[in-house]
Image 1 (cartoon, protein in one colour):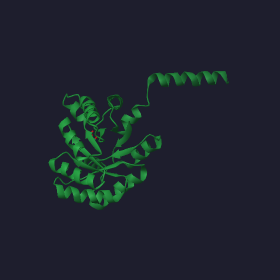
Image 2: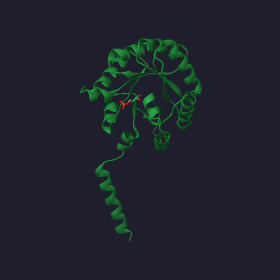
Image 3: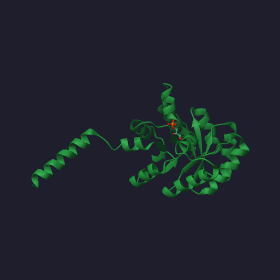
Image 4: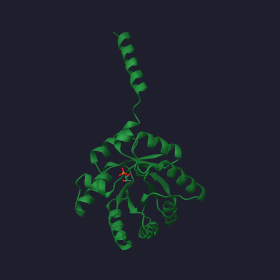
Length: 218
Ligand code: E4P
């Protein structure tokens, strides 16, 4: 499973990249706003700065909701860097845009997926990734991970190349569940990735090893 980080914060992206396990980045307009990035020029420059930190796959989301607007923005975003993946919201016009971008060899990530039918349409249109938001489903007492399993099965049975990019991940447990369910990618906050490191028995065991070494070596 590929690990993406879900943030527009350059320090966090650099920290995750330094771990050596990062495969990409996802952003959205709310994450860009959280970093105070506003105005077309600053937004474009920020995407470029993110691309310079990582090896590949930086999802940059369009703001338009109509086909022509999405296509205009997609072309501008894709021109920033070959690492850009254009993030398109799940809308009828979004599906049309995904199809056109597929024909132009531009990678896309269809976002705000909450049902299998939506993902099926996006895959049929040629989306590179679909992003089911599991945390937001969990918030409504609907098992988000069940949607990941369902999409992995459908894409497998149907032979789609579209990858399941599990999004809206809230915890290390979510990451492990996504790996078990067969998601090709999980996009996670840095806190959830770092949470995978810790186990109390690891800390206890290491403390014991170091104490024994110190005793034995004076
Ligand atoms: C995915 O690409 C989205 O940016 C993100 O995962 C949304 O997560 P949230 O539900 O925590 O806002």
